[in-house]
Length: 380
Image (cartoon, rainbow, N blue to C red; front, side, top):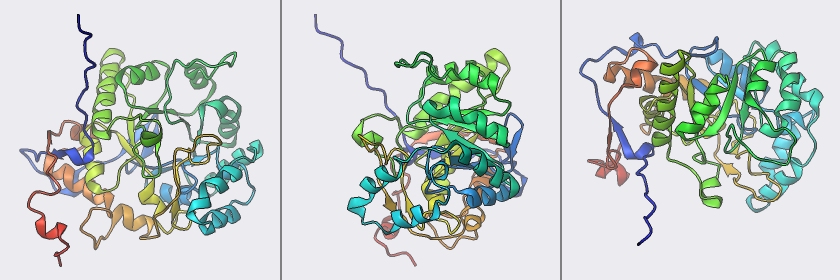
Protein backbone atom coordinates (compact mmCIF):
# COMPACT_ATOMS: atom_id res chain seq x y z
CA UNK A 1 0.00 0.00 0.00
CA UNK A 2 1.34 3.43 -0.94
CA UNK A 3 2.16 5.71 1.97
CA UNK A 4 -0.26 8.60 2.46
CA UNK A 5 1.22 11.83 1.18
CA UNK A 6 1.80 14.75 3.51
CA UNK A 7 -1.02 17.27 3.21
CA UNK A 8 -0.03 20.89 2.64
CA UNK A 9 -2.40 23.57 3.91
CA UNK A 10 -2.77 26.80 1.94
CA UNK A 11 -1.57 29.82 3.94
CA UNK A 12 -1.91 33.54 3.27
CA UNK A 13 0.21 36.61 3.89
CA UNK A 14 -0.70 40.28 3.75
CA UNK A 15 -0.28 40.57 -0.02
CA UNK A 16 -2.57 37.57 -0.65
CA UNK A 17 -5.79 38.98 0.81
CA UNK A 18 -8.13 41.95 0.67
CA UNK A 19 -10.67 43.35 3.14
CA UNK A 20 -14.25 43.53 1.86
CA UNK A 21 -16.12 46.80 2.59
CA UNK A 22 -19.10 46.54 4.92
CA UNK A 23 -22.80 47.21 4.39
CA UNK A 24 -22.66 50.21 6.75
CA UNK A 25 -19.90 52.82 6.85
CA UNK A 26 -18.74 55.15 9.63
CA UNK A 27 -16.85 58.40 9.88
CA UNK A 28 -13.27 57.59 10.99
CA UNK A 29 -13.57 59.77 14.10
CA UNK A 30 -16.38 57.54 15.40
CA UNK A 31 -14.27 54.38 15.71
CA UNK A 32 -12.56 53.30 18.95
CA UNK A 33 -9.09 51.85 18.39
CA UNK A 34 -8.07 51.51 22.05
CA UNK A 35 -6.98 48.17 23.47
CA UNK A 36 -5.65 46.87 26.79
CA UNK A 37 -3.68 44.09 28.46
CA UNK A 38 -4.92 43.22 31.93
CA UNK A 39 -5.59 46.85 32.77
CA UNK A 40 -2.73 48.40 30.79
CA UNK A 41 -4.68 50.74 28.50
CA UNK A 42 -3.38 51.73 25.06
CA UNK A 43 -5.04 54.58 23.18
CA UNK A 44 -3.65 53.19 19.92
CA UNK A 45 -3.10 49.43 19.38
CA UNK A 46 0.53 49.76 18.31
CA UNK A 47 3.58 48.28 20.02
CA UNK A 48 7.20 48.86 19.03
CA UNK A 49 9.27 45.68 18.73
CA UNK A 50 11.75 44.69 21.41
CA UNK A 51 14.74 45.40 19.21
CA UNK A 52 17.79 47.45 20.10
CA UNK A 53 17.56 49.22 16.74
CA UNK A 54 14.04 50.41 17.57
CA UNK A 55 13.63 51.04 21.30
CA UNK A 56 15.78 52.91 23.77
CA UNK A 57 14.65 54.86 26.83
CA UNK A 58 13.74 57.98 24.87
CA UNK A 59 11.79 56.05 22.22
CA UNK A 60 9.84 54.19 24.91
CA UNK A 61 8.83 57.50 26.47
CA UNK A 62 7.83 59.07 23.16
CA UNK A 63 5.83 55.99 22.14
CA UNK A 64 3.93 56.16 25.42
CA UNK A 65 3.11 59.82 24.77
CA UNK A 66 1.70 58.79 21.40
CA UNK A 67 -0.64 56.33 23.11
CA UNK A 68 1.13 53.06 22.35
CA UNK A 69 3.77 50.92 24.03
CA UNK A 70 7.41 50.32 23.11
CA UNK A 71 9.07 47.16 24.43
CA UNK A 72 12.73 47.43 25.45
CA UNK A 73 14.97 44.42 24.86
CA UNK A 74 16.58 43.54 28.21
CA UNK A 75 18.90 40.97 26.66
CA UNK A 76 20.48 43.58 24.43
CA UNK A 77 22.92 46.46 24.58
CA UNK A 78 20.87 48.44 27.10
CA UNK A 79 21.47 45.79 29.74
CA UNK A 80 25.11 45.18 28.73
CA UNK A 81 26.53 48.69 28.39
CA UNK A 82 26.16 51.69 30.71
CA UNK A 83 26.27 54.03 27.71
CA UNK A 84 24.82 52.39 24.58
CA UNK A 85 25.33 55.40 22.27
CA UNK A 86 28.95 54.57 21.26
CA UNK A 87 27.76 51.04 20.48
CA UNK A 88 25.04 52.34 18.18
CA UNK A 89 27.59 54.57 16.47
CA UNK A 90 30.03 51.72 15.93
CA UNK A 91 27.33 49.49 14.43
CA UNK A 92 26.22 52.31 12.12
CA UNK A 93 29.78 52.97 10.87
CA UNK A 94 30.75 49.33 10.27
CA UNK A 95 30.72 48.04 6.67
CA UNK A 96 27.89 45.67 5.86
CA UNK A 97 30.08 42.60 5.42
CA UNK A 98 31.54 43.05 8.91
CA UNK A 99 28.35 44.04 10.75
CA UNK A 100 27.21 40.61 11.95
CA UNK A 101 30.67 39.69 13.27
CA UNK A 102 30.84 43.01 15.11
CA UNK A 103 27.44 42.46 16.72
CA UNK A 104 28.38 38.93 17.76
CA UNK A 105 31.29 40.52 19.61
CA UNK A 106 29.17 43.33 21.08
CA UNK A 107 26.49 40.95 22.34
CA UNK A 108 29.05 38.59 23.86
CA UNK A 109 29.45 41.00 26.77
CA UNK A 110 27.54 39.81 29.86
CA UNK A 111 24.25 41.34 30.96
CA UNK A 112 24.59 43.62 33.97
CA UNK A 113 21.54 42.94 36.17
CA UNK A 114 21.69 46.41 37.74
CA UNK A 115 21.06 47.99 34.32
CA UNK A 116 17.71 46.20 34.01
CA UNK A 117 16.26 48.17 36.90
CA UNK A 118 17.95 51.39 35.81
CA UNK A 119 16.39 51.32 32.34
CA UNK A 120 12.95 50.69 33.80
CA UNK A 121 13.40 53.55 36.27
CA UNK A 122 14.52 55.91 33.49
CA UNK A 123 11.43 55.14 31.41
CA UNK A 124 9.15 55.65 34.40
CA UNK A 125 10.85 58.95 35.30
CA UNK A 126 10.08 60.17 31.77
CA UNK A 127 6.41 59.29 32.19
CA UNK A 128 6.51 56.25 29.93
CA UNK A 129 4.97 52.80 30.16
CA UNK A 130 7.87 50.46 30.99
CA UNK A 131 7.44 47.28 28.94
CA UNK A 132 10.54 45.08 28.86
CA UNK A 133 11.33 41.77 27.19
CA UNK A 134 13.46 38.77 28.11
CA UNK A 135 14.32 35.55 26.32
CA UNK A 136 12.99 32.50 28.19
CA UNK A 137 16.47 31.57 29.43
CA UNK A 138 16.93 34.86 31.32
CA UNK A 139 13.35 35.51 32.43
CA UNK A 140 13.42 33.77 35.82
CA UNK A 141 16.59 35.63 36.80
CA UNK A 142 15.93 39.11 35.43
CA UNK A 143 12.15 39.68 35.20
CA UNK A 144 11.76 40.07 39.01
CA UNK A 145 14.39 42.83 38.91
CA UNK A 146 12.37 44.68 36.29
CA UNK A 147 9.16 44.32 38.26
CA UNK A 148 10.84 45.55 41.44
CA UNK A 149 12.02 48.65 39.56
CA UNK A 150 8.46 49.42 38.46
CA UNK A 151 7.99 47.67 35.11
CA UNK A 152 4.43 47.77 33.82
CA UNK A 153 4.61 44.82 31.41
CA UNK A 154 6.91 41.80 31.11
CA UNK A 155 7.33 40.17 27.69
CA UNK A 156 8.81 36.69 27.36
CA UNK A 157 9.92 36.45 23.76
CA UNK A 158 11.85 34.08 21.52
CA UNK A 159 11.77 33.04 17.86
CA UNK A 160 9.49 30.13 18.84
CA UNK A 161 8.13 29.71 22.38
CA UNK A 162 5.99 26.83 23.65
CA UNK A 163 4.65 25.75 27.03
CA UNK A 164 6.26 22.32 26.79
CA UNK A 165 10.01 22.51 26.21
CA UNK A 166 12.63 19.85 26.83
CA UNK A 167 16.10 20.93 27.98
CA UNK A 168 18.93 19.89 30.29
CA UNK A 169 17.77 22.38 32.90
CA UNK A 170 16.44 20.86 36.11
CA UNK A 171 13.41 23.10 35.74
CA UNK A 172 12.87 25.28 32.73
CA UNK A 173 10.69 28.37 32.60
CA UNK A 174 7.19 27.46 33.82
CA UNK A 175 4.82 30.19 32.67
CA UNK A 176 2.19 29.58 35.34
CA UNK A 177 4.81 30.03 38.08
CA UNK A 178 6.10 33.20 36.43
CA UNK A 179 2.60 34.67 36.26
CA UNK A 180 2.03 33.84 39.94
CA UNK A 181 5.37 35.41 40.87
CA UNK A 182 4.90 38.68 39.00
CA UNK A 183 2.20 41.24 39.71
CA UNK A 184 2.23 42.73 36.21
CA UNK A 185 0.84 41.53 32.86
CA UNK A 186 2.96 38.87 31.17
CA UNK A 187 2.95 38.64 27.37
CA UNK A 188 4.51 35.61 25.68
CA UNK A 189 5.61 34.75 22.15
CA UNK A 190 6.22 34.00 19.49
CA UNK A 191 3.97 31.33 18.08
CA UNK A 192 1.70 30.70 15.09
CA UNK A 193 -0.48 27.71 16.05
CA UNK A 194 -3.85 27.08 17.69
CA UNK A 195 -2.77 24.45 20.22
CA UNK A 196 0.20 26.41 21.54
CA UNK A 197 -1.89 29.55 22.00
CA UNK A 198 -4.51 27.70 24.04
CA UNK A 199 -1.82 26.06 26.16
CA UNK A 200 -0.16 29.40 26.79
CA UNK A 201 -3.44 31.00 27.80
CA UNK A 202 -4.16 28.16 30.20
CA UNK A 203 -0.99 29.19 32.07
CA UNK A 204 -2.57 32.52 33.01
CA UNK A 205 -0.61 34.80 30.68
CA UNK A 206 -2.10 38.09 29.52
CA UNK A 207 -1.21 38.26 25.82
CA UNK A 208 0.32 36.23 22.98
CA UNK A 209 2.65 37.45 20.25
CA UNK A 210 1.95 35.91 16.84
CA UNK A 211 4.56 35.61 14.11
CA UNK A 212 7.59 33.49 13.27
CA UNK A 213 10.10 34.90 10.82
CA UNK A 214 8.19 37.65 8.94
CA UNK A 215 10.29 40.60 10.18
CA UNK A 216 12.31 42.65 7.71
CA UNK A 217 15.59 41.89 9.49
CA UNK A 218 14.79 38.27 10.35
CA UNK A 219 16.06 35.38 8.22
CA UNK A 220 14.67 32.45 10.25
CA UNK A 221 12.54 31.43 7.29
CA UNK A 222 15.58 31.26 5.02
CA UNK A 223 17.99 29.74 7.56
CA UNK A 224 15.62 27.39 9.41
CA UNK A 225 12.74 27.05 6.98
CA UNK A 226 10.12 27.74 9.64
CA UNK A 227 7.20 30.16 9.71
CA UNK A 228 3.56 30.70 8.74
CA UNK A 229 2.37 33.72 6.70
CA UNK A 230 0.94 36.34 9.03
CA UNK A 231 -2.71 36.46 7.94
CA UNK A 232 -3.14 32.71 8.34
CA UNK A 233 -1.14 32.69 11.58
CA UNK A 234 -3.26 35.47 13.07
CA UNK A 235 -6.54 33.82 12.02
CA UNK A 236 -5.51 30.52 13.62
CA UNK A 237 -4.30 32.09 16.85
CA UNK A 238 -7.40 34.31 17.04
CA UNK A 239 -9.56 31.18 16.79
CA UNK A 240 -7.70 29.75 19.79
CA UNK A 241 -8.23 32.98 21.72
CA UNK A 242 -11.95 33.00 20.95
CA UNK A 243 -12.39 29.35 21.88
CA UNK A 244 -10.46 29.88 25.11
CA UNK A 245 -12.70 32.86 25.91
CA UNK A 246 -15.83 30.83 25.25
CA UNK A 247 -14.58 28.05 27.51
CA UNK A 248 -13.25 30.19 30.39
CA UNK A 249 -14.74 33.68 30.14
CA UNK A 250 -11.19 35.15 30.12
CA UNK A 251 -10.22 37.19 27.06
CA UNK A 252 -6.49 37.09 26.28
CA UNK A 253 -5.44 39.50 23.50
CA UNK A 254 -3.15 38.49 20.65
CA UNK A 255 -0.58 40.73 18.96
CA UNK A 256 0.40 40.28 15.32
CA UNK A 257 4.16 40.74 15.43
CA UNK A 258 6.32 41.23 12.36
CA UNK A 259 6.13 41.77 8.62
CA UNK A 260 3.90 44.85 8.84
CA UNK A 261 5.04 47.54 6.43
CA UNK A 262 1.97 49.60 5.50
CA UNK A 263 -1.39 50.79 6.73
CA UNK A 264 -2.97 48.04 4.65
CA UNK A 265 -0.94 45.41 6.53
CA UNK A 266 -2.08 46.95 9.82
CA UNK A 267 -5.73 46.81 8.79
CA UNK A 268 -5.47 43.22 7.55
CA UNK A 269 -3.93 42.21 10.88
CA UNK A 270 -7.00 43.42 12.75
CA UNK A 271 -9.38 41.95 10.19
CA UNK A 272 -7.56 38.64 10.81
CA UNK A 273 -8.26 38.90 14.54
CA UNK A 274 -5.41 40.88 16.13
CA UNK A 275 -5.98 43.00 19.24
CA UNK A 276 -2.75 44.93 18.67
CA UNK A 277 0.18 44.96 16.27
CA UNK A 278 3.90 44.96 16.99
CA UNK A 279 6.06 46.71 14.42
CA UNK A 280 9.82 46.93 13.96
CA UNK A 281 11.30 48.32 10.75
CA UNK A 282 8.85 51.22 10.22
CA UNK A 283 9.71 52.46 13.71
CA UNK A 284 13.44 51.99 13.00
CA UNK A 285 13.03 54.59 10.22
CA UNK A 286 11.83 57.31 12.61
CA UNK A 287 13.96 60.21 13.80
CA UNK A 288 13.36 59.06 17.38
CA UNK A 289 14.81 55.56 16.83
CA UNK A 290 18.28 55.14 18.36
CA UNK A 291 20.19 53.26 15.64
CA UNK A 292 20.80 56.10 13.16
CA UNK A 293 18.75 54.59 10.36
CA UNK A 294 19.92 51.00 10.89
CA UNK A 295 17.87 47.95 11.82
CA UNK A 296 18.67 44.40 12.89
CA UNK A 297 16.88 41.43 14.37
CA UNK A 298 17.66 40.10 17.81
CA UNK A 299 18.90 36.79 16.40
CA UNK A 300 21.54 38.56 14.32
CA UNK A 301 24.23 38.33 17.05
CA UNK A 302 23.64 34.61 17.71
CA UNK A 303 27.14 33.22 18.35
CA UNK A 304 26.82 30.14 16.13
CA UNK A 305 23.86 30.68 13.78
CA UNK A 306 22.95 34.30 13.01
CA UNK A 307 19.38 34.51 11.73
CA UNK A 308 19.19 38.15 10.82
CA UNK A 309 21.02 40.94 9.11
CA UNK A 310 21.72 44.59 9.71
CA UNK A 311 19.71 46.68 7.30
CA UNK A 312 20.30 50.30 6.37
CA UNK A 313 16.71 51.57 6.40
CA UNK A 314 17.45 55.28 6.67
CA UNK A 315 15.58 57.97 8.60
CA UNK A 316 12.41 59.00 6.78
CA UNK A 317 9.93 60.59 9.18
CA UNK A 318 9.11 61.40 12.78
CA UNK A 319 7.31 58.97 15.06
CA UNK A 320 4.29 61.27 15.02
CA UNK A 321 4.22 61.38 11.22
CA UNK A 322 4.46 57.60 10.94
CA UNK A 323 1.56 57.11 13.31
CA UNK A 324 -0.66 60.14 12.69
CA UNK A 325 0.54 61.84 9.49
CA UNK A 326 0.04 63.98 7.59
CA UNK A 327 1.34 61.82 4.78
CA UNK A 328 2.53 62.94 1.38
CA UNK A 329 3.16 59.36 0.26
CA UNK A 330 0.72 57.09 -1.56
CA UNK A 331 2.33 53.78 -0.60
CA UNK A 332 0.70 53.44 2.83
CA UNK A 333 3.94 53.77 4.81
CA UNK A 334 2.82 56.81 6.82
CA UNK A 335 -0.20 57.68 9.01
CA UNK A 336 -0.81 54.10 10.13
CA UNK A 337 -3.37 55.15 12.74
CA UNK A 338 -5.32 57.13 10.15
CA UNK A 339 -5.33 54.15 7.80
CA UNK A 340 -6.76 51.91 10.53
CA UNK A 341 -9.50 54.41 11.37
CA UNK A 342 -10.52 54.86 7.74
CA UNK A 343 -10.51 51.12 7.03
CA UNK A 344 -12.63 50.42 10.10
CA UNK A 345 -15.03 53.11 8.88
CA UNK A 346 -15.37 51.46 5.48
CA UNK A 347 -15.98 48.11 7.12
CA UNK A 348 -18.48 49.60 9.57
CA UNK A 349 -16.53 48.48 12.64
CA UNK A 350 -16.83 50.74 15.68
CA UNK A 351 -14.29 48.75 17.73
CA UNK A 352 -11.31 46.51 17.10
CA UNK A 353 -13.34 43.47 18.12
CA UNK A 354 -15.91 44.37 15.48
CA UNK A 355 -13.06 44.69 12.99
CA UNK A 356 -12.33 41.00 13.66
CA UNK A 357 -15.59 40.24 11.86
CA UNK A 358 -14.55 42.01 8.66
CA UNK A 359 -14.88 39.80 5.61
CA UNK A 360 -11.71 39.02 3.66
CA UNK A 361 -11.03 37.41 0.31
CA UNK A 362 -8.08 35.62 -1.22
CA UNK A 363 -7.02 38.27 -3.71
CA UNK A 364 -3.40 37.91 -4.88
CA UNK A 365 -3.94 40.58 -7.56
CA UNK A 366 -5.27 43.17 -5.10
CA UNK A 367 -2.14 45.35 -5.23
CA UNK A 368 -1.57 45.12 -9.00
CA UNK A 369 -5.04 45.04 -10.61
CA UNK A 370 -5.45 48.19 -12.70
CA UNK A 371 -2.17 49.65 -11.41
CA UNK A 372 -0.12 49.46 -14.62
CA UNK A 373 0.73 53.17 -14.57
CA UNK A 374 1.71 53.13 -10.91
CA UNK A 375 3.83 50.04 -11.44
CA UNK A 376 5.53 51.69 -14.39
CA UNK A 377 6.34 54.72 -12.24
CA UNK A 378 4.15 57.06 -14.31
CA UNK A 379 2.12 58.43 -11.41
CA UNK A 380 2.40 62.14 -10.67
